[in-house]
View (cartoon, helix red, strand yellow):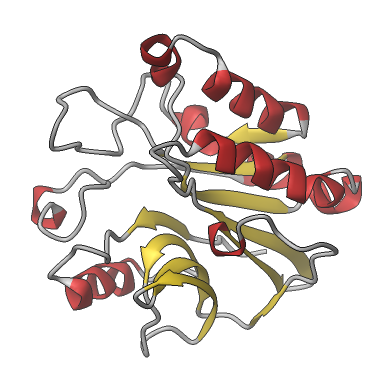
Length: 222
């Protein structure tokens, strides 16, 4: 299979004044797949699975290749926090999951743990699990555990590992990478991730975090 380019980004559309510029940047990168949070639909995208939260923005999988919504076998606890799509390309089947750590009462980790539980039946199918990409703004960072005095974020990432998923960013970036510029904190928060099942992880040839000041007015996420 030829190289597959994937973008994961929180587009910050609920407060952004530069919505079209966000899409212009994505299109300039020419991704095959975009796993997006806080996004809206856009006519430049050929195919999309978009679960709207409110005010037309939500969580989505966008692609220049044909995708269809994956048939989930249950009612999701937070339907606007998960978008799941099937992609068949060059004889390969890939499951794409855009996961958003939706804040409820100022807390995203409970949403994330529920979402993993909702997706467990999918993760346990070993033939499928190796071909899953799961990414997005998780609103999760193990550095928060020390601040909050618990291990909830650590346990979330341990659950991902136990299900057989690997951190694509860590494969090529040994040091911590910053993906969020929080206006109330100078700490280099990492909220955004891309995890892959073993087959896709082994095939991953690069992973870059784009920290471009020209994009700061569009979104507070890299």
